[in-house]
Image (cartoon, rainbow, N blue to C red; front, side, top):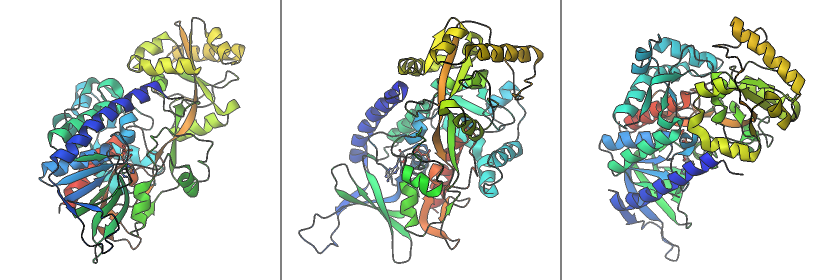
Length: 500
Ligand code: ADP
């Protein structure tokens, strides 16, 4: 069964990408020539197109890189294998972290680059490359301002999210609470700049010249025609992670097998990692795979309705008991859910929490979950519990005790951080949730200039990587809101350095 919201977003993206497909081929500044170096006259000659830079992947990192490149006067093309642009950035919540921003200043929140850096390093179990985290932290505010000023992204001006592991609220919330705002605006900007974007064109191989400098991408279009994209300055890999590739997940960490669905779009198959490995690229942290705890047990799709967790919803099991702190790290909550009966958890909230949350932004998803049978709204808590066969007496006791904690301001069982909100106002809601694979922290080893590093520790000339395809930035665990910061910061850095 398809998630309705996601389906709608993808539909919108298909329309966007279709219009860009036309614009890409018509407005491109490339020189399109037929390759003459194949002696076999009978063989269909591969078409060759010539650019300064070829960007592989039309998600957040790829589009950010392409916009910077075009702004710097480079002739750039973006290749996207799917029929729609945006990758996982599109279906994400779109929030991004940065310290010392104009929104924090407005809200009177004290923060610093060092604090953000420390939270990120700690959140990744100190396994991240500190130099890369320093670059992320130093450039985060600038990335947010770039999105606002250059790309015209609208953020909620009087609100910041505080994801797990962050010491203060620092995640800006885009209009509508989805990656749609980011991708929509990045695509608008790319269109305005006449950047050729080729959807349904899959990069299959990266080639280097006799001196080892990367200079070509071999791709295939939807009709199976081979196209060679010549890259005079270099290639930027922005192909995302490998969360949808179960075989690759198992290869690097046997735990993340078929038992887990994925929140990722189906094109998240690790292509960039596989192609770069052929050129001797080094990999880092491949075993570090992140699950997201609150997804649909039916489809694996990440639930934004379940963001009520951040506003006070309580997580219980079928026996009606809490079993983990609701704001603990994603990996901790995910593992705890898998240990419960039926490997699921139940989020419980009331109308006070509903009103605090942004649930109204996600009513399409809400209705879809109700149809799916994974969400119930009821006048009485008992009624909602019975729908899922949750132990009613235990649940009432758990919520009664929790409501006392709310009055006293202290969660005696799991020491929940932040405000504790009592569940007293009908109607009540219960949502069944399960973890899904969400982000792959490992990937290509890069340096602070986004150059891909080979197994000898040297940069591969002409090859750059940005976004989820690169490893080392998030260590063993990525904190919420850090992926969007990562793709914008490193997408732009890759663009700057490929032209040097
Ligand atoms: P990031 O957040 O790092 O930008 P995304 O998942 O948002 O990653 O975007 C990555 C994009 O790259 C997706 O749209 C995906 O379909 C695309 N992609 C992956 N592999 C290829 C490939 N071989 N050729 C072209 N595009 C690819």
